[in-house]
Image 1 (tube, rainbow, N blue to C red):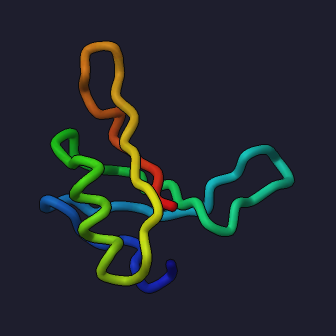
Image 2 (image 1 turned 30 degrees about the horizontal axis):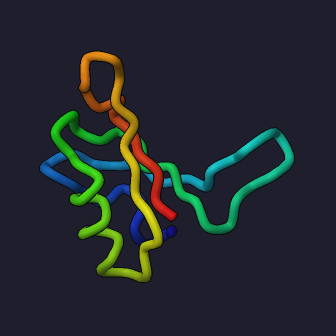
Length: 75
């Protein structure tokens, strides 16, 4: 994760951090990818992270107007 943090996707730098489900539990398999451009898709995340390891799933939350929230999850 350290080597991939602050990478670039669609011309914008992204941030990686472990997903924290509550104040004490950190998932060892789920990453939160922040600072994504609004046009990045789950497929884009999958393609990028598949270069460094196996990807089980990728998801970018969208709001009620079907716009990206600017972050995503990679497992």
